[in-house]
Length: 524
Image (tube, rainbow, N blue to C red; front, side, top):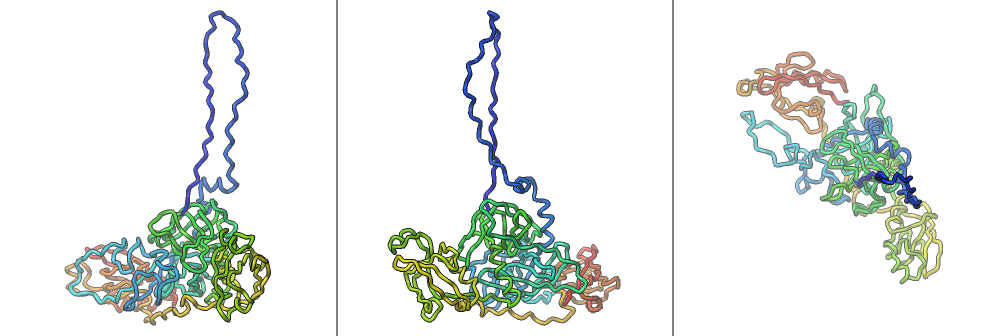
């Protein structure tokens, strides 16, 4: 999401030598000696690895892209009064305000019937009577990446919040169901667990790198599923660090100009070593080349709790702070220009018990310098409740140390009350996301379709049936190499198949053409 590196051209001074004939045949007079002109300073050499990156990032892409996955979610029909435009279900607004990404194919509304987000054209149904379609469901499309061979996937919280079904497509074409293992709304991080069969092939993985080691101007690479275009790759540089975009209380985003778009949510941001340094999360409204990623070091600190507990428990001081400025420093009579100024202390909290007061200027915590109010907030939140924290501060122009035992951060944003809905229990034959009915001979004649077979009436979004390329209006005429007389034959063929097995279907299309489809039976 950021700027470009321009090559530095070194000018070469071309001397023009003029020749003339001396009419007196005198020996040539040597030109007077002059001071040699100063040569232009050579352009600074690119560090090792950067020059290679400018030439091609193909080897890097080839090594990491197998671990990048597409994440599709179904959120179910909206309840009355619930905004359908929000990609996270649940009650109340997301802590990220407006959707960081629309996470819909081609920027459309979750209720658009066309993949490009425009108003659906009214097309007459080829059927004499309306088909029994289910209520509309919302679906989201995003990205993720595998960090553990046991099937752990990292993605964004806002993509999977409220999901009833999660389908993950691997780079090798495998489709796997997933469940939310842990999620943190305040940093927009989620951990998924893939449902792997016993004989599953090994999973490709990538590892998290050190986001603190990144420098502004370093090359970064984004891979994801923008606009539903799988495995799209973009290159840019790190534009800035520690960005606060007012998305949440712990904003510490990386800013990049590597192009990311709707559908990149949850995808990885790589350094040139092939390490993930961030999760692509947000883009600036109405602008291009400005995107934001959750830094990998923050993710690393959350992972143990997300995997073991499913949520994050944070430390809490119980005070309000603001950024220190040179003017405030002069007015308060303290010899510092950076820090966190205490503006209020909540009664009966860790800060009150430690004796902290308004106008205290906190400059360090456990020996780590504090440059801003946000830095103090993030540092305290990363500590476990009950841990002791030593604060270095100025009070009445004198420096002192204060020790505080942290409490547990309350749920100020109300995110803990948003319980994920339980997915509806569906009969085994419906788990593939396919609805069928016996073929109507009257329809067969008008649409040039077979007079017998199973008519596809509905294909659920983000389902196995959709991945197989099945569409309403097709007629299944063979299933597992056996002729199909009606819907029951297809259901029986699917029931006989083992979990993870693909069932070969032969389908007839309106107009008479026939094609093959491979429908995979879900693991569960």
